[in-house]
Length: 388
Image (cartoon, rainbow, N blue to C red; front, side):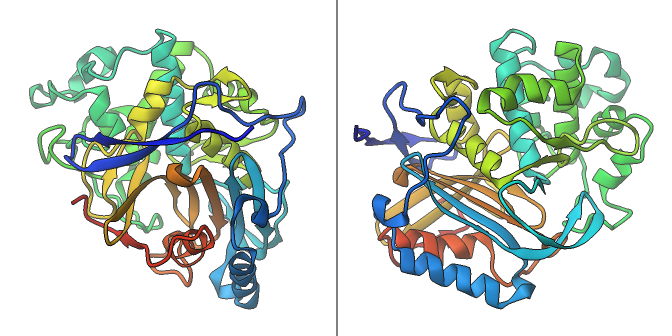
């Protein structure tokens, strides 16, 4: 049965207009009992296979590109799946050259933040964590010494949107000893270290990337469920997606790395993307509340890198002439990407090994603008940094 679709516009807090693909209630992938993928050729969903093959040839011809996998899911079908050979790491440990395939787990790095946010949404819906307007003073009663009076307005919403206002230095180079995420990891109490940072701006006023904020979310999750974070992740999110194997790395202080420590296969990353494409439903079950999914993928605050930031999701904007498309994106150091392209009913997953690099030979944005969008019949579309 062909899925009916309708495009609606939604005015976000930034004042920008967001085009959203609304799928009928209950429209989810039709999985078999063992969660097997429905695989199809690109032509079956009106994608230009020649352009996709050219992309594959380009990556194979140049090892310096170091992309490890690209998957495209369209209309609930896995229509493009390529794996490559490249240098990789397991959370900083050099693995050398790896021949990747569908069973190879990969660092998600900061894509982990988007999974952590999904767990928070589940916990709020189950009454285990208070709502997003709850203040940090209420959420962290054991850390009042770190919560000076000027932080009285700091809420869970600010923590989720990277707008906490805390003074935080986190360059893309995580070998820099001055990087505050590294300093937090090496501290005796990462929660105290993060909450204890002074304010550089009022909460909610500016975006400031902060790898300590997902650690606060993880602390709330573990306290709420009284379970280790890997068990929470397995029970609440991955098992409903049919994900049987995963890794969740811990920092040297023993606390799980909610900002960057999860490892999944690209196919399992695509399942998470489909979950959000379909409003939190998977295999007939509402795994993440629909309202949380919609709110997570809205640009609540502008950034200098993309058009906006949601609840641990980057919101990229693409345009050409009168056309404007917003693409929620889970983004991780090294080139890890999950793109939710709602108007095309599509999820794109990319893994790569370009860690701590500001410039790369072929970025995820280029893959979308030069190959994926043209393959779908959309030519001349460009990445737009500003929200306006």
